[in-house]
Image (tube, rainbow, N blue to C red; front, side, top):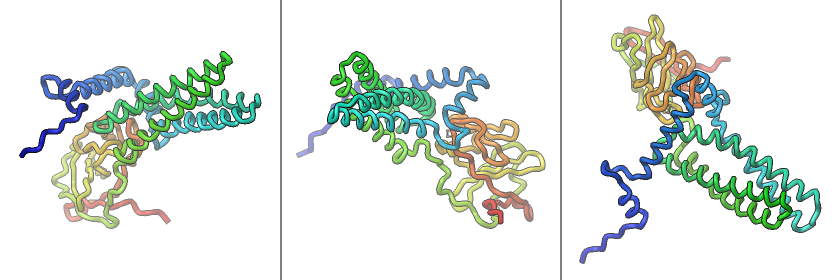
Length: 305
Ligand code: FES
């Protein structure tokens, strides 16, 4: 006897919604949304738009700015719930005032977290993209509940305001859980070069004759990819895996003495690996280079002192 084929309702809906090319409709929607965001955020490549984008990504900070800003609403709304509880027990004006003020501060922080989160999400690839979208939609619900809570409080409907805040906090916990999954499971915002081990002493990775001028080239040493670039008399070497989402930098484009990642156009300085343009926020590890007996040799920079 053959086993009956078990198909989940979610799968049936997904397959039903697939278009002629076989791509599920929900993926097309996510892709379209990302393209629209990209168009708006890059503003047709205007340099000022790139600067704003760099700021929102956290390129200047060396960490995703979104992660820092999410602490504001989470912290403020936790305080608001705490003062709501105290007010309920003690019925004191100071507690209700503190709850309302914390709630308003949380809403301001949520605006910052939303703008930076949307900017980051526009460069997130599947499978984390879906999780990011759900995380964002949940946060819209959270913000709506806390906004309603504040409005009700202003209209002297404190009990309704407290209920909305409690519901918002429950939804916030679920959303924060998904945010954590994006980082710890999908590695969004994590330095993708972390854990790569580079040689401590000089080792040969490529014959000098094989490195043409201004052609980004991949060399492999002990399973780790290394990007080599010759610019005139100088040879640069750095981690080849992009710190943002593991894009192959040897397939990127050279712009002056910088390399642009082929995946989401992060730009890194060849001389020290610093991020010139996001969405990457972590610099590329650079290596020392020398040429011996016709071979290009590299090693990890030696600690000074
Ligand atoms: S992988 Fe995203 S910019 Fe390189």
